[in-house]
Image (cartoon, rainbow, N blue to C red; front, side, top):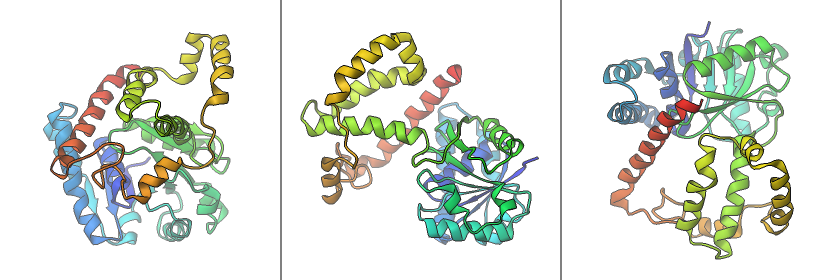
Length: 314
């Protein structure tokens, strides 16, 4: 039975993964090679839990107990040796992840399951330095940001792992309120990111062509397709609309839509100009420095509201 979770990497994804597991009642040992990142993790988690309390998603006592269950540990061996399940949220660098998995293999118990939060690197490559028995207990568990709010976790089932081990990890994630997606083939982007990139490609193209302003494109998405997607998947939407209609519309539209194989040129130009979005103060929209904290908090608040509403449709 899984009781103790190890999270390696306390940055953007790692601290959120730790928060999700501790909110679910699990003890979490959180590690990061950077002392500064590790020191900042619990205060950041406390701030995020405070918002959940404000929004009446969890009560104050539960939030305080969740925070107490997270133990930051600087030393990797000390952090993960007692753990039943370890997930790494290190940067997307193959050599780094290969080395990290080799270290985890040497430190962790033989029965521990090791997971990577990658969505772009092949599991076979990440685990290339491991023996066959350990590889049977390795997988991808891909979370969405912010991990403590986004319900999805994609779980790999690529043929290396016995069904019983997969079922145990699936049950673990469902126990902390996550909606799991079983991914059967190791493809770049897995499932959700590939869908998201398909939408983004056309959105960026529409802006580039001057068809509509950024605020109107986002409005079209939020109150059009995405309004349904919050409760209804694309395949169900197609069934309700009629597959014959979808076939005709596909023939009419797909030939004139963006079919680029690389990131949009307009997007690439914004990156060159340093217009990176919220982190730089300007992207498609502007973010005054004195309003960034409030904008970020409102973004989180909207996700909490959506999380409450989506529970009915889970």
